[in-house]
Amino acid sequence: MAFEIRQQVKLSQSLHMTPMLKQAISLLLYSRQELVDAVQRELLENPFLEEREPEAAPVEPEQDKHKADTLDSPWSQEEVTRSAEWEEYLGEFSSQSRQAQQEFESPDDMPPLESMHAAAPDLEAHLMAQLRLSPLTDRQKTIGECIIGNLDDTGYLTASNAEIAKLAGTETSEVPPVLSAVQNFDPVGVASRTLSECLLIQLHAENYDRDPILVSLVRDHLEDLEKQRYKQLARHLRIDLDTLKEYICIIQELEPRPGGSLGCAEPCYISPDLYVRKVNGEFVILMNDEDLPQLQLSMLPEELDLQSERCSSKEKDYMNDRLRSAMWIINSLEERQRTLYQVMQSIIKYQHDFFEYGVYKLKPLVLKDIAEDIGRSESSVSRITTNKYVGTPHGIFELKYFFNSGLASAGGSQVGSESVKARIRRLIDEEDSAHPLSDEEISSRLDAELGVKIARRTVAKYREELGIASSSRRRKHL
Image 1 (cartoon, rainbow, N blue to C red):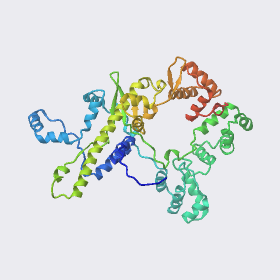
Image 2: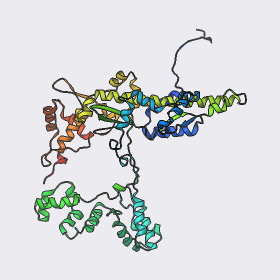
Image 3: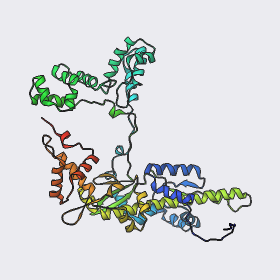
Image 4: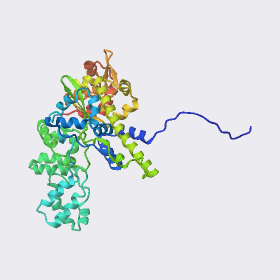
């Protein structure tokens, strides 16, 4: 068989992922904060893109004639066609008029500012401020800085006295007095090395250390309390169970992680992308564009005159590329907001009972249902619901939350899995702690309340997803 080289012409179609298409897809995936950061970067990098100034104040009646004259000018018309009016997509795709929305957007209807933005407290800075104001000497403050610098995120000390003395360049005998002072800073019990030591310091601060039984429970019997050996403890300490219960209540009020509320990790604050509120019997969608820049094309292309002979071919190519990029991002952002609004509108359509009554009325829903309803692909719906949040009358939820599998009920209808999880949590919250419900009993109650035939192992799986312990670990012996 002979081999030979031949040329062949073939016509075919293929999809190439252009940079602009990648940008449009990435904008769908961005969370709210990521989107703001991306727009700010584009504003810095693209000279043909600028942020539109806020709208001017309303024109007074005596200025109406002047306003009419300016509207007739060709520049105003050119400005309208040149700019990307971000207000238009909200009015066009809103479920009520813009005037009604403005009446609704009052401070009383929106969540408080502190629920969305807050500064993360820092344990080290909190303790260092107290150290500087303390009556300790400069040498002792140096030791205190070494102690505070060796705390973990929960406030426990991870270095020995010898290591601290070496870091501070002092004697080991000088460390304990400073350590005792730091342990009584706020939060009390910080810089302890063990849980028992931490709790004993807090008992001393509350003057509970005068009770020898309470001190013995914390110092010698924490393991027995953890394993709920209450009857053995009562016999050993020669007290009744009611008295032991009072001691346990005192211990439970103590803080086992004194630095937990002032950790170094940055908390995550959520600012919803949309709000859903009920107005005049109907659910209204409001887009949260508060800190999102409103973009428009700058005047630079007109001033430079891209067709001028003074511009080289490379300069023209660069400016044309930047101009296309500016127009593309404006259109992509509008398309993103339009898609987000349509998806939310469709979710309200399918999950109307949830917005009306709460999580117990959440219905089964899949991406395909929303995609077919709004005429988009499932991948687009998946991207636009990732890391997007909505503020509802029942709290803030990720859009992915509304998509859940269904369980068949006795009446032939479907019950959402998230609704079943909420029922499981409620049943466990209302149970008798001395006789907690088993997974089998929870399954029977779900059948009685919802008509859902759910296996015991499925209840166990949902319970574990909710972070709830088994009935044997939830049982209280008091």
